[in-house]
Image 1 (cartoon, rainbow over the protein chains, first blue to last red):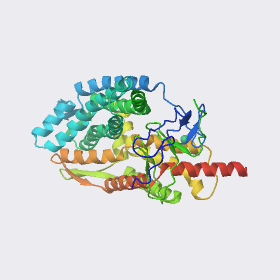
Image 2: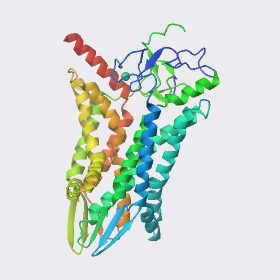
Image 3: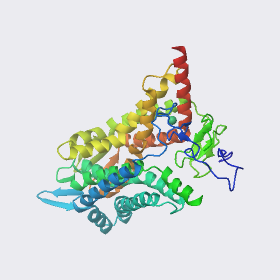
Image 4: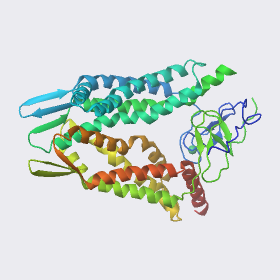
Length: 221
Length: 214
Ligand SMILES: [Zn+2]
């Protein structure tokens, strides 16, 4: 399906050993939205109107700012109750992890695993991955470009799925609310968790993946 | 440093900045970046009108999913139907309002907004007219909203919630649930069949034509 491959513009010969030239090295700037090449200094893409920047200079600052916000909100998201259940006059509150443990104890091990992966595994892995990507591009020559590009794509693709527990809480409380005796309401952790997911998504989107490859180019030549 | 090459006929990888000659591909083909492997172009046989039809289908299914009964719960002989919008309105009090708005936006409002934006940007082209003002901004915003529209994640969330509370009450799935699943499937099909760079090229051609005739 992938044939014919496009020819790199400055390749001596296509295929192995052909050194790829970047738009910046050629004195051009590319549109990240529609991929069109433009002369250096062009302000906006002539096709789609997107502002053009050879490299996003503020990328890493914004990545770290959103990353810190995401981590900060992830702490109350785990300390405060995600769900509070009221039966007559007693109220029972459970954090994300407590809720998952209760699910596992009542036999729903699969559900508990989904909640734990989406609410703990993915966010923690995402914090680590974004921090590593942002850290590695400031130290040229470190890490494999392909592996880091794949890592970035995985982070972008999978980060949204953390929202699943928010949806579960919303549906559970909406449904159980319809009954008279039991009331289930989202706790303060729910909004903190949703904000943490949103901030982490913004951190990932602020990252300029071209920085990964700049370091590689400098390392090899 | 040599003089920069003529940018015409060149494309740039959005992920790694590698410069390429614009590939000439047949429908169904695919051109990947020579350095990082990102897909640069993947032309499809589907027309703009067909893309719009798929997107309108998503819109209609989403509206149905919003207003028709989503789930019914019955306990002690009482039956309670609830649509997504009922549930959202019942919960819009105090601290829960931002949460309800976030959930509502990510599952139906943003997907609906994407349908409207795509139609605003592309519908006049399908009918042979000039693009509306702001067509480029609309198509760009449609693209930017994509990761924030989370209907497919919500569907999995519903499945998890159903298992979780199955022993608390007897639940029946309403038509809105199936409509939401269909909306997710048609939306995924639409994304897979659409070549975004082709949409941008068609829009550029239509804008140039409109300017020339004005
Ligand atoms: Zn562009």
